[in-house]
Length: 235
Ligand code: HPA
Image 1: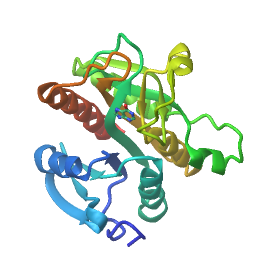
Image 2 (image 1 turned 90 degrees about the vertical axis):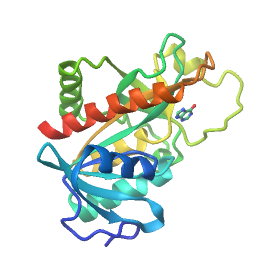
Image 3 (image 1 turned 90 degrees about the horizontal axis):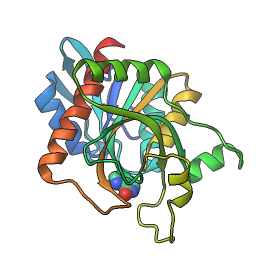
């Protein structure tokens, strides 16, 4: 048992998928994995281990925001010997031409995380995805004919920020979308010599105001999960 995860050592697989929403973890476990067991219910942050095409995989809700995901990632790495972490979640696009449902493999995560600033005493660490995971996910998607876009995203601590023209600089520097978890995931994984990747789907476009329908969300969610699970299979 760790502070926030009620699992025993050995209950968690070496590869863990991390959706923000614990009910997503439950849905994926029940619909895409076999022989599942629920190893965590602490704070309702459900975690499951099961088998995907014979490979042991876990899926753990991470909560929203870097403070929350940081807790789960730290404990998964320090207490349960996890080696590969893949966030599966959504982002809001900030490039006008980005379509709802686009799957993004986040090569790097810029951001405004207070945690990152604390850890590096005001200096800038460049949190990047693990290259092997990135390449494997890219190839797995290609094989399944799922179109992916590779590029940098932005992780923010503040969902409701009313600053005018907040994204102008980041759009200019090619940032694809905004979410709230990857920067700290990539940073903590590096520190622990583990591998991390965020596989994201565009749920809305912050610039154009277009948001996804329930049907689009379902399709893109399935594509994203297939990319992450097929990656888990071969790493
Ligand atoms: N902001 C932050 N995180 C998000 C957004 C957003 O607009 N959309 C999906 N995740």
